[in-house]
Length: 202
Image 1 (cartoon, one colour):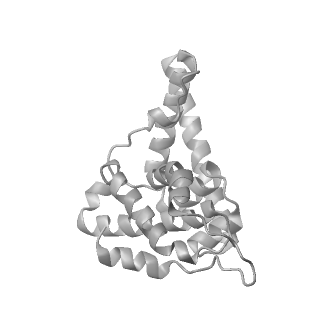
Image 2 (cartoon, rainbow, N blue to C red):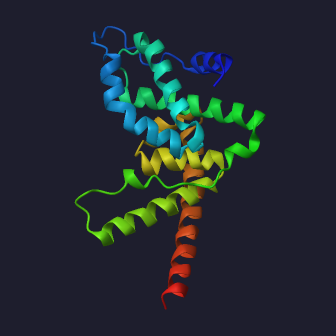
């Protein structure tokens, strides 16, 4: 991401975490990195960051977090605060990448298989989880950007509608509308997937 884009991301990050009269020890950068790296990487990926750019985007996310750490005063959780940074960095990166290399925004989806399987799973459970991960990846790759953002934040990351509305700078009603449409598309995708399975295994 260019320095200009990074400045734009930071300029649009409003310091909304301040709570007057409350003395909260800010977390250290090391604490934020340790506690938030996995979900920041996962969310950046789910929000449409191409695999080839994922490491660079996650690095930018934590560069912004480091620069803005002094603004965090405890009004929201650290995780919600970092979510805002993740969303804005990913959105800025995708816009820049789309302007320069639009084809790069639509690579073949690659499921993050290592993140969904567990060493304790039996072979059947591992296979089922891998297939589910591939299905989710394909679904997200084909979803409209606005609906994908809401679906990821609500269904996969379990944020509330008011939290999502604040992150996206839209009304809660808009969040509910986009989520309803995304869920409808998901249901249709599940039905198609099951129909294909039934044809393969009558």
